[in-house]
Image 1 (tube, rainbow, N blue to C red):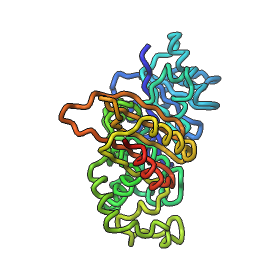
Image 2: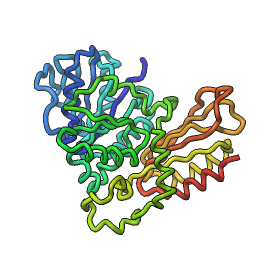
Image 3: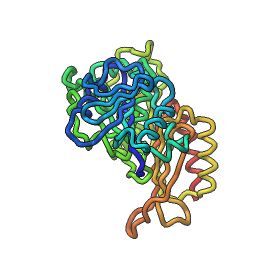
Image 4: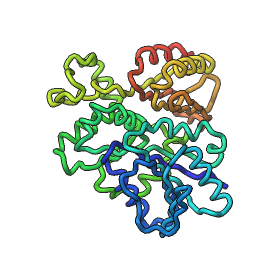
Length: 352
């Protein structure tokens, strides 16, 4: 049996997760989707219910999708669904997990790496984060959960852009880009999203290409040259949701979730890099939300692709470097108040 792909849908309260989910379930795509909702779901996904197993909270819908509510542990729910599928009691092609608006997606993602039975049944495809354009600036200022959800995202959908002015949307896009440059962003209307933007994104696939917006890199370099990260110490901030109008595009300086990129043309020494990454993950792992890279290793003619979530890190051999291809390394780190200089200097010392 091939691995069952899983999508984690996250986003702060009221960002439109249920709207998007309804749209996905109603579309005539011919796929049978198992939806796992946690118990804080504001409304039932579909009143058109065929079978209810009250004890296990599994609901079968008329379109062949199934829905279950987590009453205990995500792992137990996934194991139960997998066992029922193997026995032919349930039929589904993929799983969508809708988290509560206050959830940190990290532990949900880790479930797929820490448990052998889960890892042998499921493949974590991606984390989708919905951001409400009208309320996000305030939520991102005041709530770390909202900032974490952005930091974990493989794809960001921005809802309710029709309720705010274009310059407000642009400022939000800019801020999100600084928090997480590897997640593509898209403004969406009421769940009107094509399924190819929701499923099979391969955000957690080690061989998926490392997407970092080139303009982000250029802009980051310019900001370093000109602005010296003014007011990063927060001296202008009397309150977490202070008025931000005067800050132009500097909103990201107030966020504890930030990203930075390391690039190098020289090859890495594998042993030194392993020691260094092991040490930083040991110390800063809980604050490291997502990190990913394509590496040029001494003595290897193939790219090495690595990524991690919190303390869990993995690497894989990628394709062979092309004959005319420039061999270099590029890594992105997204985390909460990570000491950027320590990381950059440490990585520099791991080069040959």
